[in-house]
Length: 301
Image 1 (cartoon, rainbow, N blue to C red):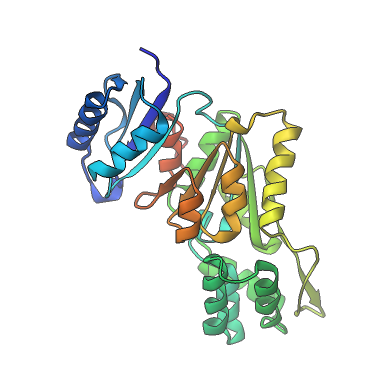
Image 2: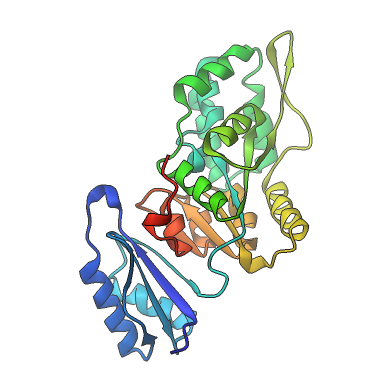
């Protein structure tokens, strides 16, 4: 059998959902359409692979969408080759962590509603990122440096599965990078907590212990995220197919589109549409199953 394509199905394990019947039904549909399917390979109780040949990705995707079988579970359809990636780039806010740091800072500055509205529109791709970023940072003027530490201590939490994802990939030799349109104050700390090799973000400027309302230029935006992906790929002599990127907003789209596997995590519509696969229901360990890791390979933290 030409094992050229792999379909990964992942149920939200927190909901104790079973996908055994769905897996067999999907396999039967692919077989009926002419796919040469192998047996269902269980990666965990709630995650499995179906490897098949003789059916192109585009046709398989149409069959899966039309069936409606996968409407309420996460899935990834991809070439079997180069499935385990060697370079991983991740957005931070609302991806690796559960919050938008700039919105939380604005809460202390008294501008949460205004800043959150701009953040939402920027994430949806409705505003120029650089202009929206400068406008939000300006509202933080005068905020004391110790407030940033308070936000980190009291409000920053890793997304479920984040540390397991990063540390499992590191164990198997993957280079991991946290790239954010947020602030280095937070990315440097999240990098250490989650276990990333490196981080890149924007630097806030202080004067006499308070924010000036200005960020250092150039601003790390969608182009900078893309450039970081490409620079690291060339530095490590990797093929595009060996790279992985994940994010949730419009600012992540160029990076997601350029990666061998671009994934949108609980994402805005534009980011989800640009991605090769999405994670709509599960946590970040779903990304390990998409790469074929078995649950007994995970580094639990």
